[in-house]
Structure formats: C-alpha cells, structure tokens
Length: 235
Image 1 (cartoon, rainbow, N blue to C red):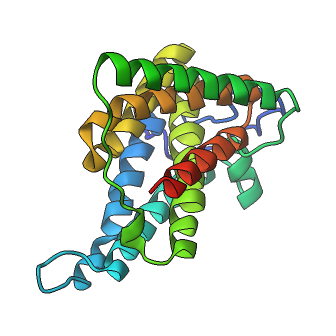
Image 2 (cartoon, helix red, strand yellow):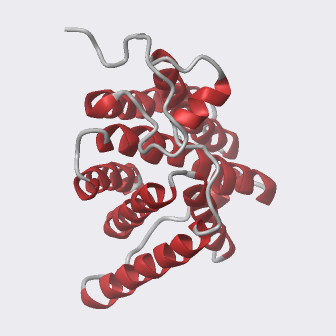
C-alpha cells in the first residue's frame, strides 16, 4: 500500500482554505511519531555530557533539547515536501505558517480565557498541577529563552498544530482532531510532571481551535511563546 508520505503531484492549497495540509490523518500520525523519535535520536549525543553522578550536565541538557526541537521541525517540513511543497516557503505555508487577519487577536484573547478557565477549575476541583522546572538545566538565560520561548514554541506548533492537527482535520471533525493532537502534545510533556498533563492537553486543544479559527499557526506560536515566557519568569 502506498504511504501517505510518498511523493505525489498535488495542487497548492488556495489561500484561505483550511486545512492547507494534504497528507491526511495517517500521514499526520506517522509524522508525529517520526518527529518525536527523530528528536530523541538526535538528542542521544547528550549522554556524552554527564557528571560523576551520571546526570546530564548543562551541555547535555542543551544537546537533548536541541535534538528534540530539530526533530519536531525537520520531520514536518519533510512531510510537507514529500506531498508536493517544493520550497521552504511552500512547506511552511502548508504547515500553517500563513498571514492572519486582525480578528485573530480577538480569538487569541478568547483562547487565553478558555485555557485559564480550565486551569483554574482543574486546580480547584482536581489537583494543583506540579511541573518540573527544566529551564535552569539549560544554563544562561539567553539559552533558556532560545530553547524554551522560541525553539519549543515554534517547533511544537509546527509539529502538533500544523502537521498533526492539520492532517487529522482533513478527515475528522475539529473537536476529535483537536483532542487527539492536544493529547499527543500533552503526553509529550509527561516527563516533567504527570499532574500537569491535563492542563497541557487543554492548552493543546485550545491552540488547535485557534488555528482553525484564524487559518494560521502564527497566533498559536505567539500564545505558546507567551505562556513559556511567563513560566520562565516565574521560576
């Protein structure tokens, strides 16, 4: 059976069409798995940077995080290219990096409100989420900003909203696609604290719906970077 990732001549999506992807649910899910695996493999050289106790040093943590960021960026670009996007710009547009209308700022505000409402209810009714602070493990503040505020926000939006949600949305209802993509996104962060996974799933769902409303993942990147900045400042 021919893979959804196989090269095939396809028409470039018309501006305004949603989703702009054309790899379908199977290509999206396979791409997400490959992106995570590739990211982990690229981070393996980090094991060369350990201290006497066997823990990763600052350099090791940076290498591991950088490998993950590259995997989450590189695989989606490869998926878009394999489905007919020939230039970097075309790949990015297919992944949702597109212009958006000023009304997107209103949807961004609504997204923040929805996420805060869930987070407050979760903390009050279920459990106060605890998440390990990994920022300090990356060393100087500029490196933390580069890897967490910029790298993670851009790579995760391209992978989990642009590629995964975009592909799922071709065949699935928006809520089903958003829940699947949000769950994958949340579970990726389980190693930093299991109680923080549900709010992160909710955050992922909200960002998927924001992409659907605006037709661009750029507003989601902005909110993601803002969220990571607040977390960084709060450490």
